Image (cartoon, rainbow, N blue to C red; front, side):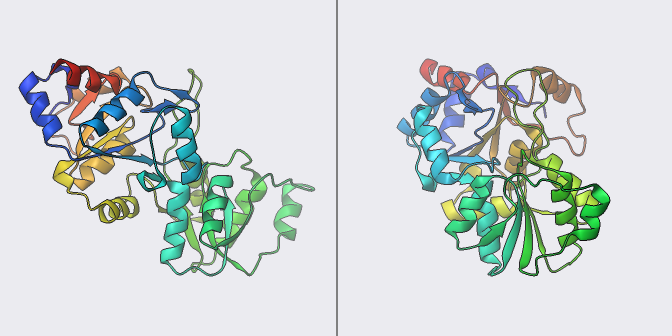
Length: 307
């Protein structure tokens, strides 16, 4: 079945759609903001959802910040959020290790958001920041000594990603008892211009290739996140809406969980992508087609105002 533009719904169809939703889960980058810039009309739409009595949760694969830092970002961009309403993958990585009763040290390829969330759970860590290579690559491989306390490798977005980090992560992962945690599989982040903005998934895939192991992914669209939010928020999938800009993470999560899905075109996915979806065979296996799509989240606000 083809996806429908939200503005093509009749007033009755749209009214039934809104009334069928109790809970809204929304991606952040590409839906509510692009890095540091708010997306026009999105704050007003979120506020309207809340005025209508909908629960609203921020579900992001971003791992560069903590939940409290996301609260501050939301406030700065005119969104009203509490820590309980935010799920980010830096936090989920810490939750995963805590559930495993992890009591060793984590080698982290990532940023301070992961570091702080691990510390909040009392988990020791190392690896954050630049790792300068002394000598050549052969000397590095010959001279690297494993830290016997390492019991996990956690991978997020790392602007300092380097060959030394790759060597260390892959070497630790030779031991099958060491946990391999990937925060998310996104290979691209919404870009502020036409340049490509590689995402965390690029780092995870590189380490998977070097170690010949697959990471346990804690972010969208994987089951660790879906099971966590369904249990935490007591979700009824049939009355839950997932909003996102990425079909392979946001919309796929919604489809797997039985949520209603709304794609917005302010991030990764373009109108040409939607046209290609609608031109493909409706029953083709593997198709990730949202129930509805919108040029921007603000289209929903316009529909509410006119209904």
